[in-house]
Amino acid sequence: TDSALITANTVVSNAASVMNSDAELSSKTTAVEASKQANAVFISAIQALKLVERDATDGAVTTAFNDQYQTLLTQTTALEATLAMAIEAKRVADLAAPWLAQLALTNAALTAANEAMNNARFEMETDAELSSKTTVVEASKQANAVFISAIQALKLVERDATDGAVTTAFTAQHQTLLEQNNALEATLAASEEKRV
Image (cartoon, rainbow, N blue to C red; front, side, top):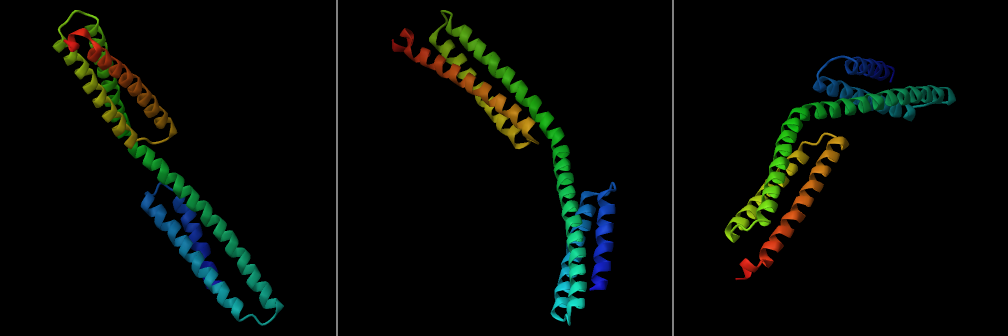
C-alpha cells in the first residue's frame, strides 16, 4: 500500500506537470489516464490492507491512507476537468477556419437571396409577361433554398452559443424570405393572367 501511494503521488504530480506544459493533448490525456489508473491501484491496495487489519492502530493507518487517496482523487478530478476544458478549447480552435469560411458563404447566399427577392418584387409590380414573373419568383425560391443549405452547413461547424446565435439570426432571415416568396407565389397564382 505504501508503494501504491508513492506511485500514485508520482503519477499525479507528473500529470499535473504535463497539464501545465505545452504538451500535446494526447500526452495530457495519457498522463491524466495514468493518474486515474494509479489511484485505482492505490484504493485496491487500501481495501486489501483493510481486510488484514488487526486492531484500532491498524485501522488508523488504513484511515490515513484513505484520506491520502481522497486527496489524490480530488487532484485527479481537477486534472480531468482541466483536460476537458483543453479539449473543448482545441475543438473550438480547430473549427475557427471552417466557421469563418462557411460564414462568408452564408453571408454571400443571404445577399444573393435578398437580391433575388428584390428582383422578383420589382418584376411582379411591372407589366412584364407571366413567364417573366414566374421565372423571377422561381429564381428567388432557388436562391432561398441555397441560403438555407448554407445555414445548415454553418450549423455543423458551430463552436459555441455565440455562433449558435448567428445561425439562429440567419434562420430567421431565411424564414422571412420564405414567407415573402410564398406571398409572391400566391399573388402570381391569383393573377388574372394566370387565370386566363
